[in-house]
Length: 388
Image 1 (tube, rainbow, N blue to C red):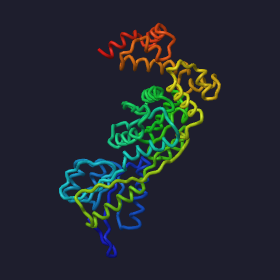
Image 2: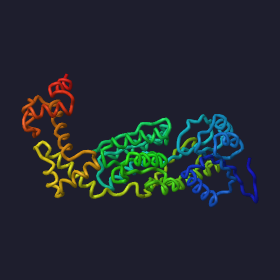
Image 3: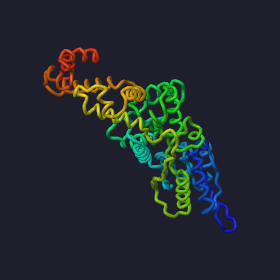
Image 4: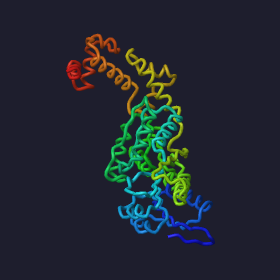
């Protein structure tokens, strides 16, 4: 198993990764950097579980980002071959063989992305697009990302059977259209973020002014040539490779060989590109208008009152509202008033006349007619269903 040349032990190390992914190529860069500086290894790079199965029995150490087959697991366990599993825990039945589990801190990647969005301005909603297979790492990024927003609408896109297909892009476009704008959207990884950008083009949503998009992994081939270029969280995959090399080195030398250890790589940075830029003054104008409407909608205000308070023309404000919110200022005021009416019908015993006066309607009949047109039922029916 081991060859000795000039009194130096040369150990055979199998590294099984997906070379098609930029993250794994960066991982190998860090792994080889450590190996060249610190070791004398005969390294064999594998790209499939089948190759790993064949090579495992003749190696002194195995590093894998792939799930080993049962035969590969048995070969590693039988000969107590040290194993480094990168990215996930495979619940191996391993006897006395040492194993190190190394992964990125995926929840913190999500939190990091949310924190970056918050530095760009005030968003009206946050959306997450998961991986196509319901992976644990994707779920962890989703959790961390959504926890980063406490005061805006949050939504998660449902999985589709064929990510990247025309049907998937169309469904994504509908979901993106439904998000309050401006929307902060994180995708579990860069390819999924590219799909989001395609869906934005289909829905004629402006990036980043209406939908800002960030991916993960900073794959240059995907990010630099996306339309627009894609901002991405960049975990330090090269450092992860160095950590893996150091771990397998220690275990093969029989130094620091606990049966099981877990190592978390927390290093990352934001690769900023055009898909996520600071929110424009227009978006700030919309946010100010919405805040004014929220504070004064029940005072029988008109669109002209909003534009006057903000110091802009009524026509410009309506134009921006239609562009970013899909409605006029007048409709936004009416919708906010009806929300107040529904809340009072559900939570209080106030009469319809009292609710009418409280919410800024000219009289009770006006409110009754407006409510029935908007909600398809009378105010009494609404109250009965809510309180029944």
